[in-house]
Length: 136
Image (cartoon, rainbow, N blue to C red):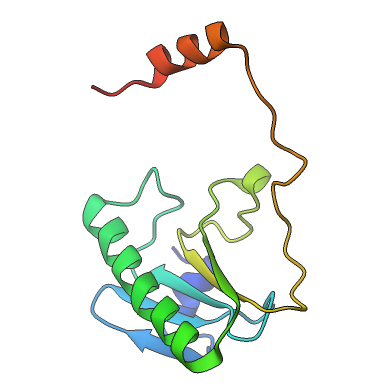
């Protein structure tokens, strides 16, 4: 995609701090990191989100995410690692090219959590949702 900043990085038109690359996936440091070592794992093919990406792409991105998370854990020694992937603006996706974040969490890292934001539904509503979403 011509106007996609990630596609431009992948083509080498914009520089990045490249950490990993294979035929289908690339990983680089996020230039607006949450913490030291925050990186992105990005497929080279342009997909807007998880709904467009092929199953093979999703598997390859997750494989590289694990490689990079292990490297971060071993080399930077964070207390935890947040791995997330946003789909749509409302979910926090700012670049409309499917990608996964690997975010090391340290003692001083400000990290939004779901604590205090979760809710519950009555059993009857849960059963309705179960029926709607059940796959098999």
